Image (cartoon, rainbow, N blue to C red; front, side):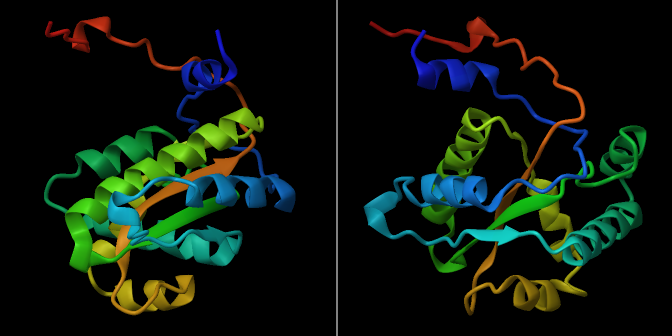
Length: 187
């Protein structure tokens, strides 16, 4: 199997991180892989923000948990509580990807492609990762969304797109089992 396909097959979602920051060289390489992602019409309607500030990560997590707890449907909140109560699973680092909402549809697709580059690059470097849309819950209530956008350095008018948690795994787990029934050939 070639190296790219091997990395794709090995990637899994980590939910238990060590308290150890990845080296700057690794984060630089991952950020470079992110910005090498294609985008529709080369608009690049995203930014790549590497967050190592533990207080900011904790503040985002606390706001996100408070928002989920306030919802009538507590299923998301309960699932996080069942998994140890940490929205970001103890990840020491995250990459936040804000997008230009004026180009929402294409920008959101491009954001997904960019985040896939991040998780594959992280896996290839021996880091664990989690694609984490739940960071968006910190922006959902609107109470602190402007504050977080400012603290994260979002360009004017940009909104949360997605994030990726990064770090070293406490324990490795197997990737999900691919469901080959999802593949359809039309000839």
